[in-house]
Image (cartoon, rainbow over all chains, first blue to last red; front, top):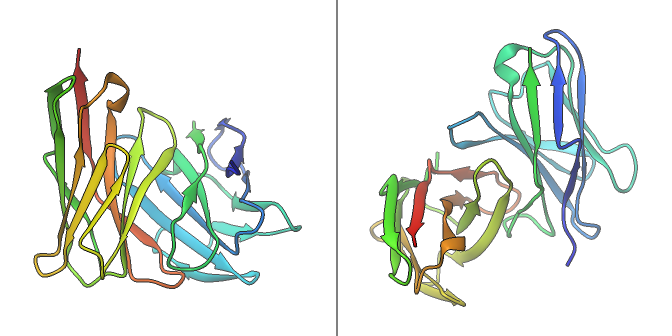
Length: 113
Length: 111
């Protein structure tokens, strides 16, 4: 069964460094999402992406964040200058069409020191 | 905005018993979904119920939706140790809309 994959599974970085989190959505899906979950808290929406542009973004998704679909398979989340409070599990999700089931990847656990 | 809130926050039951978790939300929705998350792991989609549906079954799972009360319930029958996880309801407004997660119910199945 097709799955969303994410790399790396874990990333440790120094405050102020740039990180790129990678996702490979399910191949025939058209809608892509990033969410994050700070330890012990609820899953929060960051951004949705369709037709090579951002559809919607949350307040969390400030100028330090960007997303890109550089080729036909990858979907990346970049944090330009990481802060301690960016430490969280980051989930990528994809959906065949809008308003349908979103399938989540296993997540990348980011730790900012 | 839509927001799912589950109750109870935590639930411990004996293996073999049924587990019922509830979710309430605030605004009108297009779909409501239930996800499972094992500790520190990814989110596994369990079931989606549309706003025009009242009940849905999938294996040992039964989901109900009452749009008049803005609430949903997830019933897991004949629970197993492997059902130990956190369960989240998530609501969306349709199209490419984000989904909003609740805080989850931590379910612990006792052997």
